[in-house]
Length: 285
Image (cartoon, rainbow, N blue to C red):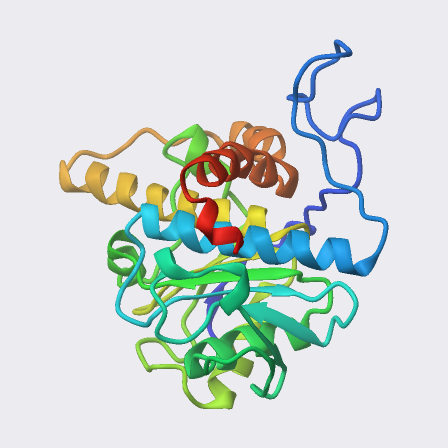
């Protein structure tokens, strides 16, 4: 196997970063202010509905970003009661038309156990392998995007050219295995899945971007959106022919810890969720 792999320890969202017990410096110290709170669930049914609704919202967000490419693109989230199963978007349904009622539930063998639509073969090969190999990973996202696919052709990691890019510093890998070959054989999924240990994102050479979250579908979806944006920015900078000034490793790590955590990815998705609920209520049907 060949990959550019960081050696930093896994980043977790649960452990407080601050002495006062807050997960993030963005959490207000002042009490009583309106601010998103992490959800709590009374049972598996409530948590399942929450995850399915956010999975649908992630698909709708991908539609807004223009991440569609025919039937390509697959997002998954593990079922809270049956972690050997995962929910995913249906085959050949546009991201903008995904709703709670047409999601499908599949196992790690690609068998649909709930839902009426077929499963995306490439999605099953990649996602099932990652979910099965990494029980800690809750969610995963992949789509054939313009800038991420273009940047993936370079076969190199992102440079820390900005605070946004620093969120991925030492927290993404470049995967060269199976580069450019469509992942429809199960061995392809196994070749890719090993590189997701302790990182939230991968650039698959000659293929595109993948993100994974141990926290939520919201975090996986936002970091995919962010990674695509960072790829676009780096391509734009490099198109000038000028050498960019890089953020230092020390400052990049500081920024990553404060604006690159799973919690921050979840937090960034909250205004997206609110916007979608207000403008596309049909997604919950």
